[in-house]
Length: 109
Length: 115
Image 1 (cartoon, one colour):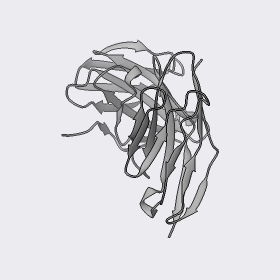
Image 2 (tube, one colour; image 1 turned 135 degrees about the horizontal axis):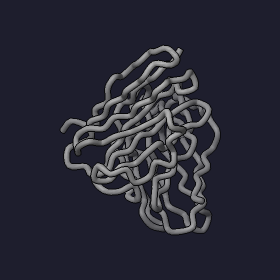
Image 3 (cartoon, one colour; image 1 turned 45 degrees about the vertical axis):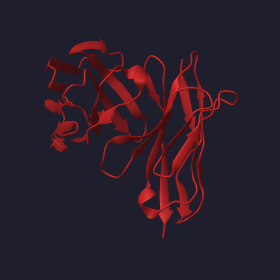
Image 4 (cartoon, chains in turn cyan, purple; image 1 turned 90 degrees about the vertical axis):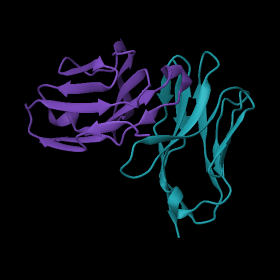
């Protein structure tokens, strides 16, 4: 079945550092790909999405490109802020939405 | 617009008691989802409704769990009897379309502790 694999956390970075959170997927069809973010004490929020190969999703300075050849959808941000501290979930949807296990990110001032 | 509203935000109960969690989806959304989040198992889909009809309940752990959606603006998740291993954060989410679009709107969750 479909699955999503994310890099293990936790990830700790200094403010203004470059961020990459790796995500790879396995799917039989042509899924859409998503990044969700969960801030402390809150539910998940959709951060960005890409619906087909080579699409780039972007929002709030975060970007991810749908790479079919490497079955990847890595999340990147050029300069992180303390307010980016959260848990990030990669997900794919084919007939249903499948989430990765989440990566906890902590940004130190 | 109001988002997905869940209640209670926190519930502490004793083993064997009945627990009812409530959810009001975003108006106009026709799909509703119940998820459970734990450190050990991550985010698990329990059940999915479309137009108030349960479509996929394969994630419901066992007969102690039941979910209903009597109308488009209300759903409940009931656990009877509750056990300590049910302790988790339970999220309700709604979507304008089905799960294949992937665009879900989550509530803030109900944190359940069973002693």
